[in-house]
Length: 218
Image 1 (cartoon, rainbow, N blue to C red):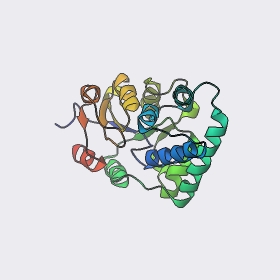
Image 2: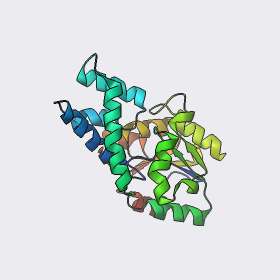
Image 3: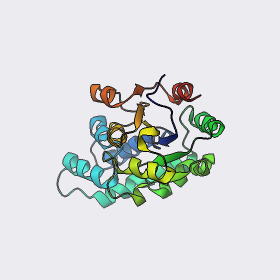
Image 4: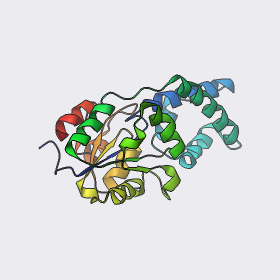
């Protein structure tokens, strides 16, 4: 068996797993940094992947220094991101196919994301995917975000399934930490971050892409 137990529900991250938003956000941050005569190193960005804005802001201040205008930065980054969003952001390979398989198996599914409900609707809405999830656990309903397990525990509760019987799919290190802490069977599907020894320990499997996960469900 590819996984530890039979899967009774699946909990998805969104950014970098279902939609190719992480690369877009990084480009937006690079453009914003260049506009103020500085740089956004990839190493700094990697520390922010999977975190809510408040935690990411602390990393930005650590990088750019005290007195950094977070509000102005956020406004510029958001403007650049909206430009690309309007042009259309691609789904990750296998996103639609895995939902089709879950439909056939009759398995419930949820999203547990550090993004807002508005972002979920903007990213998945154009692809008609929002209504294909039974629960949306966005940052709007979270008290503590990833790497805390709360988003995944809330997802399991919303689906009415024991966390131990849930498969969690994540691309970020912080997301993997959160899902594993919730007690879920956790699979990392790397996007911008490579799996580390810690990720190998926390995950039941590391997948090349969502198509590989399909083979473990069908």
